[in-house]
Image (cartoon, rainbow, N blue to C red; front, side, top):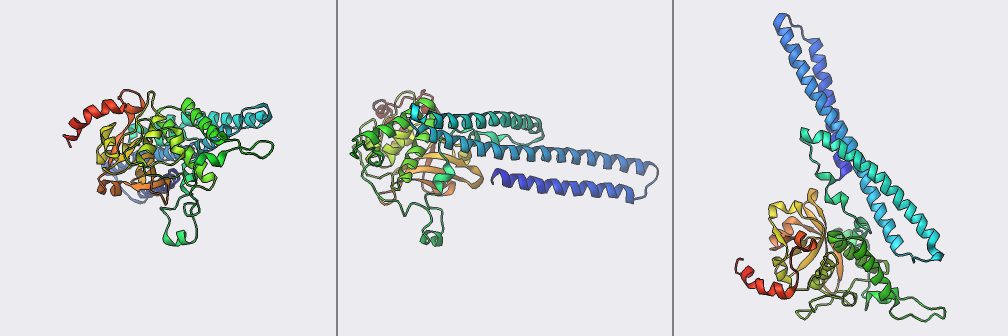
Length: 384
């Protein structure tokens, strides 16, 4: 359920309580009592009214917080979009005015969100003791994306009906396979000649900016989102190429540009969020990285965690507990490439998937060197 849906539900409940409150008031005036019975009834009705007024106050505060939360999330998405635009504009004198205008917009939105966040937290701090959860201001809201998830999801059509697919909705069926993503970003000189390597340098600069600006989960997820957006903006697939078991321990950007399968793709994105280096490993071995999250706790998984089975692995981009599903960036074969996709908890559970909490990988406390990993793999596999 979205924030606004929850807010509407809260408003309806508030209206019902208000009606109940009025009915109780009418009852007090319509009944004729005398002596101690009248006193007892008056006290009882007064207590009920007080409790209902508290509930009405809670719901009113909750509704206000949800409205502010919705605005906060919209601002976050706009900030992410503006940051991505800023990253794609050359940092030179010719573009200084354009960059300054974007920076002002980002600053204004961030200032507005700082105020909204303080207001939301204040409301939640008051109503939490009365039983209302603060989980809505968790990582799903705080996470810093530099390109919109919703925008990218509309470009792929796994969740569309057959009729919608036949109507040509979703970009997946329109995307073409390319040789290497960076070739589509090659620049030309004054004579119209392609400057070899300029596209690769352009994409590398963006990915390095992500690495330098963000850390941990944010860097890993933003790497995946930006690569997917760069590809779909050019109308091409981020290519899939099966690499078998021959990948080098470290997955290079050039390697990803040329097409990868599920495990080097996931390893590359995770590596962008680690303070040391994250080495590629065979698919099933991802189950020995991080900490497995019990199925009943999958709602607690965070962006940057990993879904893995014995034959497939992907990066969790977003968790949607209200709908019991994840948004995942994963390699889906040569016909589809690497895409953003919905995966339900039940689908993954039935498919034998594990969800790995990668906190210790991102904070650098877990050794991600594959050579060290190989030494402990046998003892881990014996526990399965």
